[in-house]
Structures are given as structure tokens and as C-alpha cells.
Length: 307
Image (tube, rainbow, N blue to C red; front, side):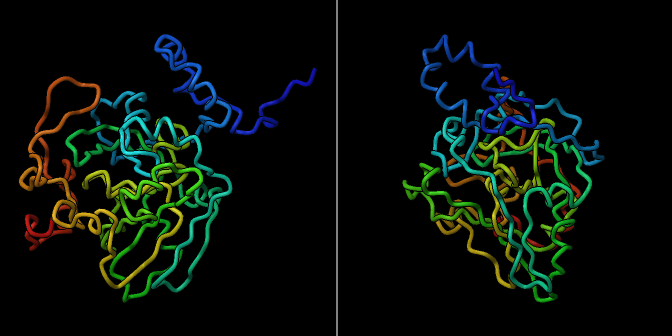
């Protein structure tokens, strides 16, 4: 009998921790047979440790099951449970990230190069979504600025555009045309360079689960969650504000900046309160999601008009 050593086992053959822990629930609810077919192709829970960061929140972390089971990732469906059910289809190997535009040295990195580019840190960040729910997540990554320095931006560069992967055969949501694809997000260059802006490669000490934006995503903790692009394949420096996916879809409801701000309501609901997943009741929303150190980025701006 052939016994495989760990090095002989492809990641696609290893059941993720969350699915393994919930197997009894699947059986009890009758979903076990349907979801069992997903297990052989799901992403492995590979370890990806980072050193503790001074930027971390000391709040209670949101349970892993909520972080990985309740997501917005419209490429895999618009219901919050759709990404966990469908993202096993995402192909993450091989994966490259191209950085181009107004730079001295355009470069392409593979995922192994990105993981070794700078010391990994664990940063426990609050993430607040525009619908009114929030999480506290221990991300693993490093400041995005460390990556952006590699290409030497030109003096004319003012903005950074993030472009996500489109795999039409693997992403059922792409066929629905809810948004224009690929998914595009953007930041002002000073926002992208801010020490809080994270290039995330993992969470909870593991590589990113596919439903959370594997293998590379951006995390901008003082903005609503949709600003933190997932499954990034291209970064482009520009001299003009990028037309982002949600601004293109509905400029009235989704602004380019989208800073968390309890004084600027969404046209269809208030932003003054939020619900932390895993908790009862609601809490007050904080300006910039509580990350007051970013306030100087917006000195002199009317944050109600530039929302």
C-alpha cells in the first residue's frame, strides 16, 4: 500500500479546517452529501504565521466560522453564504500579480515572491461592511507600501487601481452581471501608502481561504469592506481617479472614498450603528472605523461630499 507523505499531497486533496470541524453539522442538516463533493478540491489550511503587530486591535476576534462563512464576494454569488459554498472553484495556482502604469520599473510577482517580500505580521483589524455588519479579523500580511516601493512610482502617479481576477468558468457570479467585471477598486496614493493599508496573504495564521480573497487581497481598515479588493491580479498607478466597480454601478450610493462615517448615511439605511458578527445587539459606528490616525489624510475635505 502506498502511503503519501505530507510533501506528496497536493493542497487540493486536503480538507480545510472549517469544513472538517463542521462535518457533523452538514450531516445533521442533510447537506453533507451535497457538500462532500466539494472537499477534494477545497483549499488546504496551510500555515502562514506572522509576528505580532503594534497596529493590532485588542478587541475580541470574530469566530473563524463567521469570518470564513459570511462574506461579500459577488464573483461567487450575492448571498453571504455563496462564497463559502462556491469559492472552492477558484484556481489559485499558479498566481501572478502585475504592477504597472506610472512606474519606473513595472514588475510581475508570483505568490512565493510576494510572501517573501517583507516580514509577515499579524494585524488584528476591525472590518466594517457598508450593510452594517462588522468583524474583528487577525490578518497576516505586511504594509502595501512595501510592495509599491518595488516599482518606483513616478511623480505623476496620484492613484492606485486594484484589479481582481476573472475566472468565468470558476466564478458563477460573473455570469449574473451584477457588476462590471473584472472587479476594480482604487485608492489615492497616500492612502495606499499609509502604514495601516495591508497586503493580506492570510488570516488566523493560515493562508487566505478562497472565499476571503485568496491568495492576495488588500485590507483598508478605515473604509467600508468593499474597498478592500480580493484575489488581486493587477495593480496600476494612474494620474486620474480610477472608475471603481461600485461607483460605476451606483455613484449615488457608493462613493470613491467610502470612509466609515456614522454621519454619512447610505441612501437606504443609517450608518450610525453596526452589528458585530457573533454578538447580540448593536454598537455605535466610529468615524474611520476607529482608526483616527488616518484623519490627516483628509484634512480640509468635506467628508459628507467626498464620501
